[in-house]
Image (cartoon, rainbow, N blue to C red; front, top):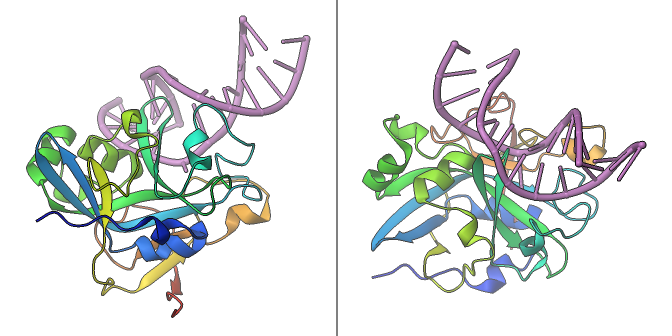
Length: 211
DNA sequence: GTCAAGATTAGT
DNA sequence: CTAATCTTGACG
């Protein structure tokens, strides 16, 4: 049976609220009749307006226009002209909020991921935003893709992670603006599939607020 | 039009 | 540390 896609209502809230909830969820990728599955272990929240590190900071452009569309869609862009990065659009339409998927724990279809990534260690298949896109065959053709259809690319529910959740500063974000230093990177403590970062040890413990 | 920097990665 | 080389914003 096919895992059902998470409903649009799941994505219709602030990125900083959704981001920690994405940890443990399954990222499903259907490619050439194969189902590739990864468990989300690391994410970063990016806001619109007040967040100078967000691509949405200066308003819509041809590249980032899908960020300003309805929640529950993908925002895929090319970084440094080389690597693709996958974001989940969140919040109200027009806000430009999104959550960057930074690392996965590979669960199924590892042979296909290896074919895309070459001869690397299993932990290096999907432990970075560019790496996981390459492993899952995600590129700009999926920019704007609706994640609520349950086809091609979508997210499926899963039990809450057993690992504690850590929060810390976002990777590769610099500047003087106060928002830039906010702990909007979330990852599973001591999970070996989290991308290597100097902040992995100096993390702030974090709990998902009860509903 | 030119130019530098960027939510990255693999390789000196 | 640097090259890979797409997208954007600052500038003339």
